[in-house]
Length: 154
Image 1 (cartoon, rainbow, N blue to C red):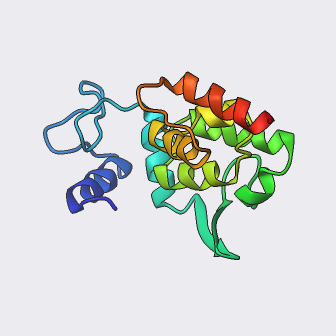
Image 2: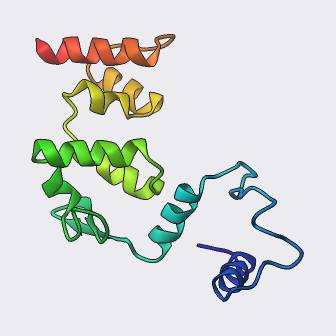
């Protein structure tokens, strides 16, 4: 949720004015942690706040209904069932979408796929490896993924 200062700044910029004493042409945009962000990342953050997707819970699982893009109106769970949909969801993970949406996407992608496994965090991968009886301490991400893949092939 944006702070009051961020909302005032957004309103001021939309109405044609510039933030007090600042010109967007001379200073790079930064996130709340002071890191530079691209205009696309900023748009994605604002789009999530404007409701570019809805989060729903069905049958005990979180899902999201996309409200933008070529798959407008589609549920993430439905997209994950077709190869074209899986490719689109992977594209979303590679780009800067809100973390809440990324968590939902990862939940629905097939876990037996190397590319999907590589999108998971080290903690998520280590948890999967431990559930399979592996002890991944000191392993790289690629080593964990390879061993999970080998274990699933058995």
